[in-house]
Image 1 (tube, rainbow, N blue to C red):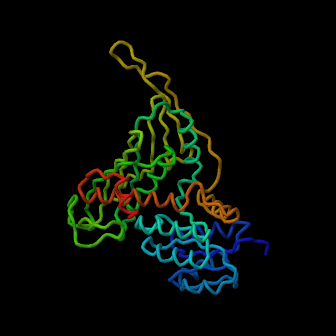
Image 2 (tube, helix red, strand yellow; image 1 turned 120 degrees about the vertical axis):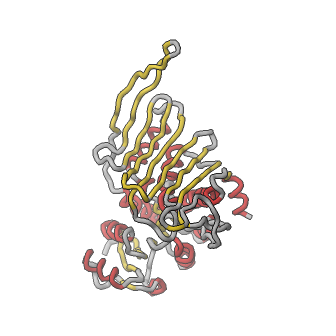
Image 3 (cartoon, one colour; image 1 turned 60 degrees about the vertical axis):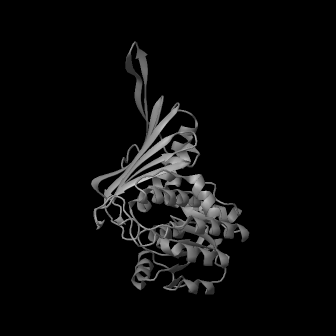
Length: 365
C-alpha cells in the first residue's frame, strides 16, 4: 500500500464510527487497528466498512503495542478515560487526535500538552465546529470588521435529549459555542458566570452542593446534573456573549450570532440552505427617533466539505509536517477546559463571577 500514516481508532461508538469512516477514506492513511471494549461494535464496523482481515480488532488498548510502525491514534472514548489513554499513547510515541474535551481537568490538560511537546508529538483535539466551513468563513467576516463595532454575542443550543448521566448540560454542550466565539473574536474570556437548574437527575434545586467530588474542579458537584444552563462570557475588550443550553427542550436549536453596529452575523446550523447569514441594518437618528436603515440579508457562500473530514485531514497534515494544529491544538483544548472548569465553579456558587486569570494562576502552581 502507498499509505504513509498508520492510524488506530480507539472507541467506535456514535462518534468514533465517523472518525473511522473518514480515516478509511483518506488517501494518506492506513487504518491498522480498531479498539473498543464491546466486541459487538468491532464486529459491526468490520461488516459496515468491509475491513480487511489484517486490521487488528481488539478490546484491549494495550494490544496496540504489538502493531509495528503505528503512527497515531484517534481517541473517541468517554472523557473520563482521556487522560490515561492520551498519556500512555504519548509515552508510546504516538501522535494523538482526541475527541473533546481533552480531559475534564485543566491541570491534566496542561500536563499532556507539555508531554507532547517534550516528545515532539502532535496533540490535537477534535473541536469539529472549528473546521466547519461556516465557522471558518465567519471568522474572516468578523475579523475583517464587516460588522462594525461589536456589541454582543448570543447562542442557543437546545434539544430533547440525549440526557447525559456523566456530565451536565454545561459540559455536554457549551464547549461548541465557546470555541466558536473564541475563534471569531480571536480572544478568550477573562470572566465567566453560569447559573443552572436541575429537573431530571437531582432534587430539582438551583445551585446547592452535594458530597460527590467533581472530576473537573476541586469542589463538590451540585445536587444533580443541570439540565438548563445560562452562561455569560466576558472578553478582554468588554465584549459579552450569552449562551443558553438545555437538553430538556423539544425546540431544537443550534444558533449563534454576533451583533455589530452595522450588521449581525448568524450561524444557524439547522438551516441547510443558508447556515451563515449577514443581516445588515443600522439606525439613523432623526431628532429623538431612531430609524432603521440599510437593511438587507446576505447569504454568505461557503466552501463544501464535511467538518470532521477536515479535522482528520488537518491531523494528517500536522503529522506529516510535524507542526501543531493552528486551529485546534492541545493548548486550544486546554483553554476550553479551563473555561468550562471556571464556569463549573460559578455554577456551583449560584452564578458568582469567576475570573480566568485567577484559575490559571491556581492551576499552574
